[in-house]
Figure 1: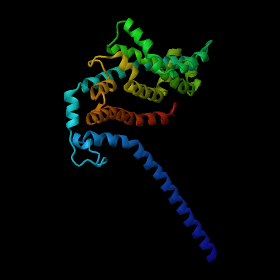
Figure 2: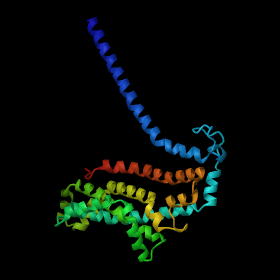
Figure 3: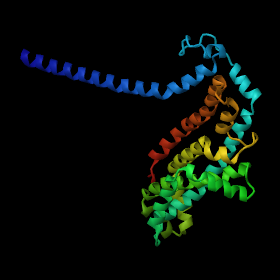
Length: 293
């Protein structure tokens, strides 16, 4: 009897040890992932609050700031049109994302639900269009924009960004619409709804998480876009945040690292907050389900 008890006790002890080692591996991986993801933000923060004479001192401790300062933030806001660039980026991103979501949603629903000749080929062509790099398109688009008299105006970016955002939103939402049961729309149409009525009253509320996801990605792409903004927006009053920061804070081989990191931090925090705000809503939308009893 005592032998059986010892074996059982040893088995439990071994199981507990395995569980402890498993938890150690899991939490070690999570900690490594968090450190890897958050370290760039930490580096931007400590660089942005470090005085210039310490930044360029090769003997300093790079990970700790003993004499923090907000001088770089003050210079960034007072000596450069940073707030104007921020406003331009926000305006262009909101307008281009809205246009892309509206057009992309309609195109994705048509390709996912309606049967017509060449539908699959058109869907594949949209996906291929998204894969075409912007380095091949910015010169032809610049010529078209200049011919239309929109060069060096915010509307140029608002109408140019959807050229790569619409294929992205369409491709992303096609798979989401295909995952929604057709029976929901058919029941609505049996009850008297038209195709548009079923789309607006049934499909759109269910696909709201997918729309939020597509909108977040589209907003991020337009917020960070550089090549089109560099080509089509030349004036300081029209430049967006990525191009404005580079043109103003990088002069030849001189880098104003303090202000650069301050601008990078202020420009990335709104995106991080946006994702954090909509993440909970996205999860709730995914778990809510299509039918509630």
